[in-house]
Amino acid sequence: MPEKVIPIRPASGFRQSGTAPLREPYAGGKFVDTLGRPLRDLRISVTDRCNFRCVYCMPRDVFDENYEFLPQASLLSFEEIARVAKVFVSLGVEKIRLTGGEPLVRRDLERLVGMLSPLGVDLTLTTNGSLLAKKARALKLAGLKRITVSLDSLEDATFKAMNDADFPVAKVLEGIDAAAEAGLSPLKVNMVVKRGVNDDQVVDMARHFRGTGHIVRFIEFMDVGSTNGWRMDDVIPSAEIVRRISAEFPLAQADPDYRGEVAERWKYADGKGEIGVISSVTQAFCSDCNRLRLSTEGSMYTCLFGQQGHDLRTLLRSGASDESLRDEIVAVWRARGDRYSELRTAETARVSKVEMSYIGG
Ligand code: SAM
Ligand code: SF4
Ligand code: SF4
Image (cartoon, rainbow, N blue to C red):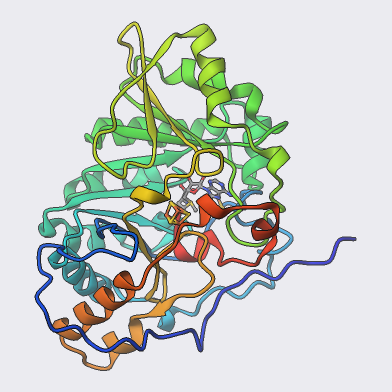
């Protein structure tokens, strides 16, 4: 039996930035990190729980019945999230993604969407789709603009082996249809590609969604967290994915929609839509990375592969003013020098990192 891996989740005692407050104005986002990158994109994890046990994210032997998820009291409340989000927007954040864990398992999530919608930013959500058929309309009515649904295969056997929750493909497709009907568009479909597991279904996935207006994004399997047993051999490079799809449906590379866009865009030559590839492993995009993640319990992570968070919840719960929150966020961002994917080696891949289900994908 291999030794059981204990996932990292710094529930207490994590580092608080000790940088002295900055006094100059930084409204409008006129501040950058040590590599000149502005803060534009905020990902908020609303829960560390999930009803799936995807083998690459929350392997069941680790996230089992004995695993201790965060207690309710340590989660940021919707009111706290909305307040912090407003402060982030005042600092130049233009895009907010709700994620997790599975965001739709958090009760009444549409209430949070309704609280964030007046901020006027690009508001979106990433979900495994399992509860989407029920929730799509309420989310749209609350002000959600668009949505990303994860789906790793169109074949039940493969999909169930990957979600390890016996969840069928048809239910996710139902969720996708409900979201499209509700007007959540453009709709993106995320497929994590793992060699020997689902890479034989890349072209099928492209074929299925071609011409629907939905955009499939093929994601390289990443060494996030410390529990998914990542090996470089399991990664199918995005270039290979583009080659395989292009052999059947010719593709031409398209310009990014905006600077710092994670996915590289490829359009079908016959005009039947586009796909995206996310090459975090083989073509690092750290130089434009403008994302900050807020964990379920209010800790800021300046990199998906972070080991240490910066506690914002203590400040938030101690009656701090918005100005103090702004000072703290700016201090953390200004000190940021993360570029993990550019520096990745077999050695760094083995180093313990915080779990993706905790800081949000
Ligand atoms: N539960 C939601 C879902 O699955 O869409 C949101 C959270 S999930 C952590 C966000 C995204 O991260 C999903 O699209 C998932 O497939 C992706 N992801 C998780 N672990 C990954 C890994 N090791 N490599 C690449 N992508 C991963
Ligand atoms: Fe859950 Fe999403 Fe992680 Fe799968 S990828 S285990 S659905 S949080
Ligand atoms: Fe951003 Fe870190 Fe990913 Fe680089 S490795 S793109 S810095 S999150």
